[in-house]
Image 1 (cartoon, rainbow, N blue to C red):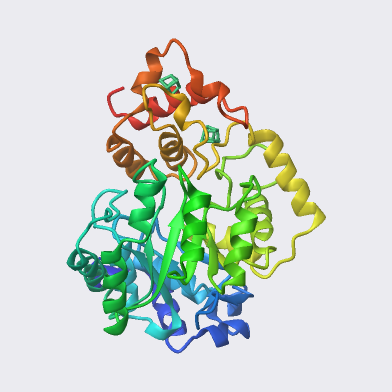
Image 2 (tube, rainbow, N blue to C red):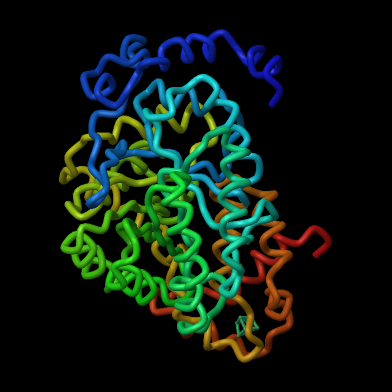
Amino acid sequence: MKRRDFLRSGVAAVAATAAITGLGVEAAEQGQSQGQAQGQSVIKRYNKIGKTDLKMSDISFGTGSLPSASMVLRAVDRGINYFDTAPDYGHAEEHIGEAMKNLRRDKVIIASKFCNPLAYPAHLPAGSTKEQYVKAVEDSLKRLKTDYLDICFVHAMGEMSKELDMEKKRLLDDNMLSAFDSLKKAGKVRYLAASSHGPTNMEDLLMAAVVSGKFDLIMPSFNFLKFPKLPDIIKEAKGKGVGVVAMKTLAGAKEMNLDFKTADFAQSAFKWVLKHPEVNGLVVTMKNLSDLDNYIPASGGDFTARDQKVLDAYARAYGHSYCRTGCGQCEDACARGVEIANTLRYQMYFKDYGMEKRAILSYSALSAKADACLTCAAPTCTGACPYGLPVAQMLQAAHQSLTLYA
Ligand code: SF4
Ligand code: SF4
């Protein structure tokens, strides 16, 4: 966005800018933000991330669908100080860069990824040169209009290969580690992190990241429809001073037709995640101002019996149609090698997250799509899902949604 267009984007954005300059975490903690002055909900809790010197808002901003710079300013004005972005999240880095012209750098935490600015997923593969890793970060810094990242992720472990060893090579790539050391010495990146939403080996890869001693924080998919080994991993992380930032906390974010509002469900789901002492905060994709209104009231809140009832009702209604992000247990059941979990995750982006363009582009890059499912006479995948999902049927629907000329 050009400066002129940015300024045209509204009086409120200008007001937000005025409020932000000089507004730090400390001020927000004391409830002195512009948002609170306007009677809006604001962030109430900030947590230290592992052994780092960073303190993040418990409800934080995922920029996978970031619409504008002014949205960043509005979020900061409500007390959000942590922004999770990536080169392959559309124009998110550029939007943050535009907002940075009006923000004090030391008052926001910017986390980006070792990725290229292409259609998602564009993670740098294992074996990339040190120069390629360094360049990825330097290009991000240019788009973000800043001279350092607080955090850089090796992103989406388990997404580039189903082979555990292959992804471990990406996780602990010597060139990546050497690039990080150089970038850190140059003051261009402060902390190293690893994330995973599967589809394969999420738990094993994140445990490998924790025990390696190389990473300052991890970011798993984590929600109340949970994974058996994840509690052990986040405990191990806490023991080693590795921070934990959760993502995919809404268990599919289904459009609901239940007795409570979508916002109530989101807040209950967030409070469930944040009640774990090992979790420092969560990031959730925010697309519009309603998301700020719906999500921020969960900040600092206690998880109650009512929250549990809400989550139980959601699980009853959607537990048999939500493909657990990061799971991948049915992948080997398909003799034709269909990328089941990736397909169903992209369908979630399309149907539930409103990220249609990214979903279609990402699906088009899969090597084994679900067109095979349209004529499959023996859908062995369905019986392989321990959660009873009608996998073949869901894949057929996903292929129809994600293919322009299906
Ligand atoms: S369909 Fe079932 S088994 Fe397959 S990835 Fe999703 S939740 Fe896991
Ligand atoms: S429906 Fe058939 S082709 Fe499709 S994933 Fe299941 S087993 Fe594979």
